[in-house]
View 1 (cartoon, protein in one colour):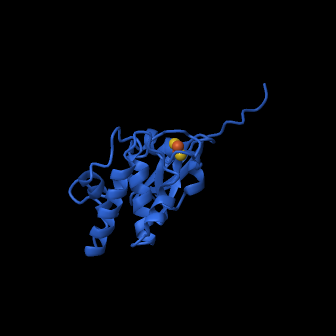
View 2: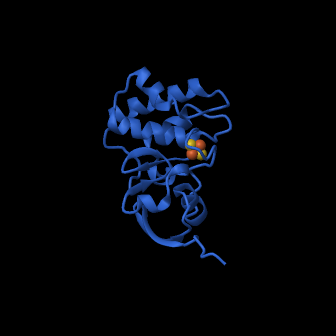
View 3: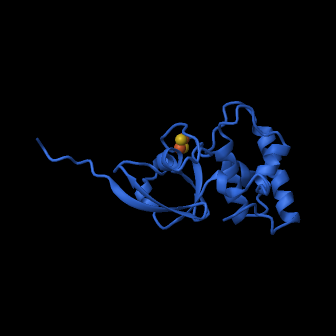
Length: 171
Ligand code: FES
C-alpha cells in the first residue's frame, strides 16, 4: 500500500479577536474552517472559486475570498468575519445602513457586500461612485438589489463621516 499523502495539521487562527487551535486536513480552506469548525456562518459558500464574493472576510483589514485561501496560510493573521464586524447591540455602520436601506432580496450576497464595503470605507472614507462600483464589481447579486446596495453604501459613508469613531464592535 502506498503511503498516505493525507496528513492533518495543527494550526492556530485568530478570528474576531479570539485565538483558536485547530486540526485541519491538508486542503481545508479558510471558509470550511470558519463555517464547519468555528460555526461562523456569516461567510457563505457560493461558487467556491473566488468569483462570487459570498465568502468574503477581512484578513488584516483587507477583503479576501475565504473559499480559495488555505486555512494554514493565514495563521497569525487577523481574520474578521461578519460576526466580528459588529454586534447586535453595536452594529457596524455598514451593517446598519444595509438594514436601513433594505438592501437585500434573498440575502445570500449580503455577507460579501457588507464585508467588501466595510473594507473599502476603512481605506477610502469618501469613495467616488465609480470606486464603489469598482469595489463591488466582484460581488455578485443575482436578485437585482443593486440600487438599494448603492444607497446603503451612501448611507454608511455619510454615517461614518458623521461619527468616525463608530466602527462597530471591532475586537
Ligand atoms: Fe468564495 Fe464565491 S464562494 S468567491
